[in-house]
Length: 178
Image (cartoon, rainbow, N blue to C red; front, side, top):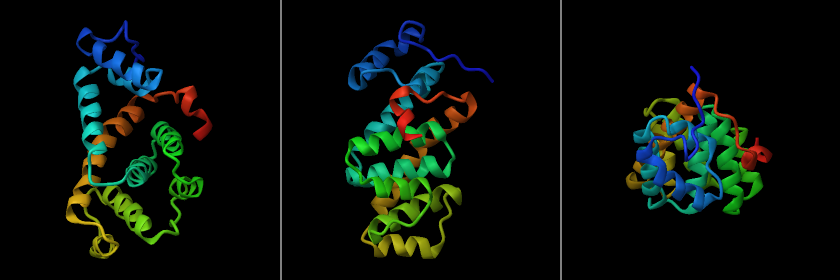
C-alpha cells in the first residue's frame, strides 16, 4: 500500500483546522499525522485519545514510559523515535529511555513493574500473567492505572499500525532518537 503524506493544503477540508493547530503546537506537522489525514476520523480519534491519556492518573514520566514501551513492543520505528525524543524533552533519564528501547529491566522497581505490565498487555493481547498483574498492583499501581495503560494501547495501535501500513518516514525532528 502506498500512502501520501498529506499537508495542510492537501488534507481533507474537515481536518485542516486540526492540522493547523497541531503544527502551531509542535512547530511542524509530523509525518504520522500527514499519513493519518487520509482518514480525518483516524486523526481525530488519535488526537482525542492522546488528550485523554495526558489527563490520566499516570505521571508524565510514567506516560512517556508507557507510550515508548508500547511502540517498542509493537516494533514501530517511527513511534519509538518520536517517543524517545518526547521523553527526552520531558527530561526522562536517558538510561530509562535506553532500557525501554532495548527491553531491559529498569532499576526503579515501580517503573519496572509499569514497563513490564505495559509490555505484557501488548505482547499477550491483553492477557498479562497473574504474576505480572500482582507485581503491578504490589508496586503501588491500581486498577485505574491498569486501564490507563489500556487507553494508551488503544492510542498507540492507531499510530503503530498506521506506520506499519504506510512505512511512514521518521521526521528529521525525531531522527536523532532512531
